[in-house]
Length: 211
Image (cartoon, rainbow, N blue to C red; front, side):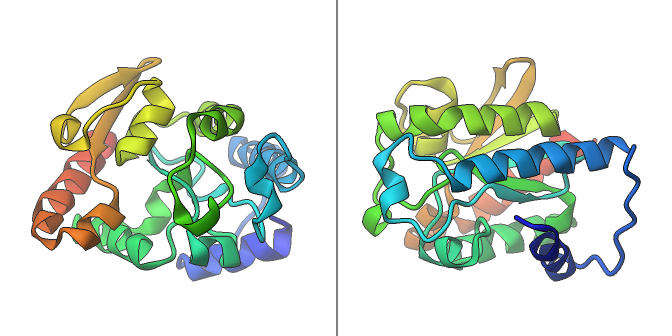
């Protein structure tokens, strides 16, 4: 993401002014995230790069105490170069706002940075190829809470399979960070009765981070 695109994203998120201090910790984080973005745009570690329009790093507040982690970009994300901007993303944004926060308060990313063909689930090999980028993002942003959206995000972090209905609502530990587990918003779109539970989970994760 170049500076022009970054400023457009910030405007879309509600920021009308960006003050740059070249020596600030925030600016250093932005530089490091931009370095990762340059790397993923040229990444060929797995076959997903063959069909992507662009890799999608993530977006949000680099100083946020919470990082939402999903599965992979979908069609709209691949087009726009932003995470969670399709219907599932709109539901996530609504849940965040309903809890009393703004999307610009949080950071949002995915396990995989490239869209899998037909939005299929990324393979374990594809996840492992991409995971070092996410790990660096987590280290740079250094949130106190990770909110994992769905079973694929859970598998990407913990390297084991699970049924999300079993783990949903759990608070686990990952390298000293609290990890809140909930549904992927796409699952909630397919199962509308779970929307109140999903909204409550997002609220709890945010309260855990911002308390």
